[in-house]
Length: 258
Image 1 (cartoon, rainbow, N blue to C red):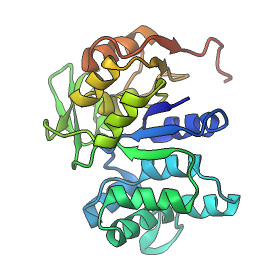
Image 2 (image 1 turned 120 degrees about the vertical axis):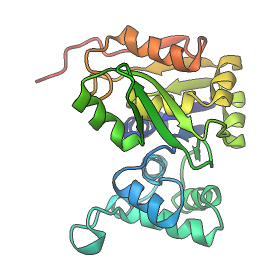
Image 3 (image 1 turned 60 degrees about the horizontal axis):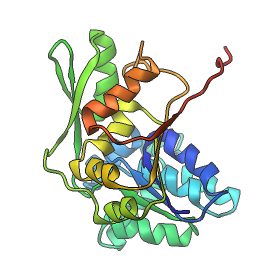
Image 4 (image 1 turned 180 degrees about the vertical axis):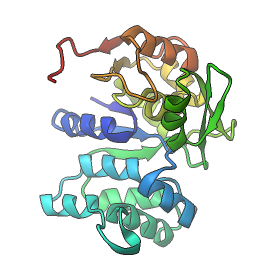
């Protein structure tokens, strides 16, 4: 069975760790809007796409010794590299050696014996914007939760700059060939929707005959979905990407522990 999964952050990589036990034909399509933390520094210093979410998905699908996974996820604790991820630096180096981010991800996936493939949703230099209900416009994925909490105004809409960003052709092929499409789990406005607001992506999912499943988060998220019901999550996806993006929703039905 061919599975295509969308997301970013830790949600998608967690999902992939389980999925690879059931099929080797997995395409993970990852948001590239991150501009904070280690990924943001790499993006600013080297002018490449943010590597963090890509790195997490590669590690999740890799078939390597535990020590190699620890190396890829290692963060420096002191000095000028404090907080920086070794895996992110590795991707930056490979991007230079392979003359491009897309080829670097492919080569790293080969080296780490990745099950399936990991694909950036776009190769464009995307910036995420959010409009709050009070009219405030926020630019930058890392700023959205902070400003939303400061102003205590719900997010009404998110968009991308440039507005004409193009989806990666291989991502479109993965959608067309999929038997199953999984959306989430992950941060609704900063991991899930940045993929779905690319018109090519949402149109491709809508036209696909695959079974389409949305995996809802276990809990709401401060700065994005405080006070949201499950229905609010589903309506936000439909409002941004249109109808027809999901046939079913998986939702946790038990109360989380304290």
